[in-house]
Amino acid sequence: MPSNLLSTLKSKVITPNDVRIALFVLTLVLFLLGAGAPSDGGGAAGG
Amino acid sequence: MVLLIAVAAGLLLTILRAKLTGRTLKPIKLKFGWLVFVAVLPQIILFQIPAIGRQIPNSVIPVILVLSQVLLLGFAAANIVIPGFWLLGLGLLANFTVIVLNKGWMPISPEIVHRILPTFPDDFPLVEQRLGYSKDWIYAYPDIHLPWLSDHFTLPEWIPYRVAFSFGDVLVALGAVWLLWSLSDPDKKETK
Image 1 (tube, one colour):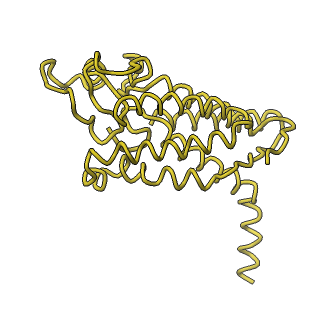
Image 2 (tube, chains in turn purple, orange):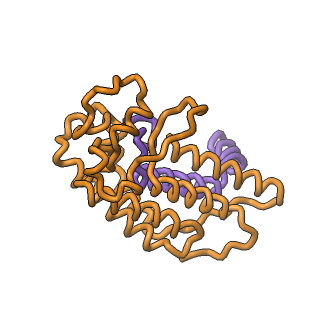
């Protein structure tokens, strides 16, 4: 029963499309961190 | 940070566009997406985790950086037909070229370092050392190959955040915004 409830909740909140978008954005962010070379490192840390 | 702002702006714009037009965001299928994770992981360890990055000798870093960017160039080439990717690839190619021509580091001149770190005294010796734990190496301006592709742009004075970035970074940021914008395109054909 709780697993059914959890499954229903998940399907309402996070769709497979959302997961694919999130993965796509994560890939893009990683690409930018690797391809870019600003003096601050491009992320939270660095220079 | 500046590149992550481009991602945030692109996401915001495309979500807004999708809401206004009643569309849903459609993910784009990327070829060899795993390659990005493999290529960038060493860079994250080197440049984003100073505790580990400072243990790696400066002689090794250029090799890792160049190899990582070669893999990313391969990824960009494999996805070149996707909107915005040619711009991402061109930006990466610009950064890669200037890095390769400057011994595996993104060159930055002392003048630019003084601009982004104004607390350094003018006579502070900066040349021939790494800038913090970044990909930048400080060269005297005449020693920089292709200086127009180096980190020589800075944000306007009225923006408190101090950072230097390259022409390649600008192209990469624009490509990211374009790519994210295309997520809310009306009838995007799936790219295989």
